Image (cartoon, rainbow, N blue to C red):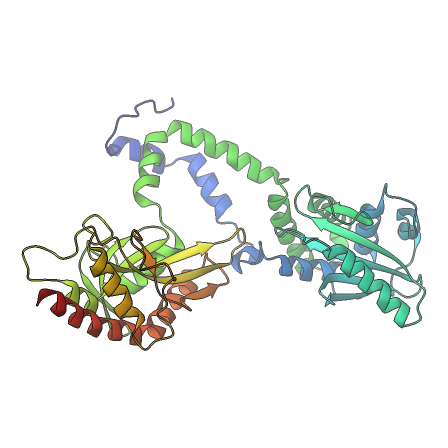
Length: 430
């Protein structure tokens, strides 16, 4: 029976046992998630350039896959089927010998370019796996291919093909469209019909790749079955799963943060990264806040009445804070930022003096916006050149490495600002 006890509080032992001990549904889902797939292991499943590389390999009749020109003809014919009858047509392609086809990648930024000298055909393939097309992009590629043919004196019939993961139409009407859903059907058919004639290594690789693109295109039956099973598992054990998600969820950013600060770090506790002394304040799935130890020591006052009125509920209660932040995009790429900010001091003259003093420090890495000292301004960031690109936001080592590099690059600023803050505090206490 579904778990209808949604009262607050942790689940009891019986509820945990029911979920984790001899639960066939959970074991099936774990087995599905733990499938070995080298493309996924190398985190290449969402990298458009890797899909272009695999497809270029499949399309090349002279490559090691053993399909000769079969996949090439199937792909081109599927793309051009039902389009206008400009040469080459789908029927002409399926009947032709394309064994002399030459495949190029990233030629004039064209994802895949196919030249068939015997038939005087060329094909411009633009691959959009997750990214979006730019205005005029397809037209430029087509015109570039036509100009190359003209310059070389070749008489070519050229066609543009737009390959997309989503239901997106090309912005150039002369392009024919083929979707990854079509590619999965073509590849699946060839594996089924010709798998016995392919080497074991090639056949296994093609199955791994088919698994990746079927899931991306929403055509994976095993994934659909696992999703249905997961929903049923959640309905049955909702209270336990909700508790686990709330208290156990983490991210690669959190794992990366733990490599810097350790596990279960407490508010206000010191830690060091490559001899840079810091004080921890808070962490969530995308942010890690702290202060350099020199800053905290300088901002701590012996006065019973703190001069930092207005900042009591802001971050750690000081007029300044530092934090790391992971910003992500629709792809696996992202950026780690190291921010430093002056907060909402109530005393306008004090806030203005603090910002002006920081601005006068001899550092190109400390720059405020022009309106930072206006009356009424509250939050003013001031680090420049403060980001590192991360090619894979699912790689905690890349994230922690980016954090370390930023700390190292701003270590001089930490020290310079710490000395200034010590003098600044003494001046306002005098």
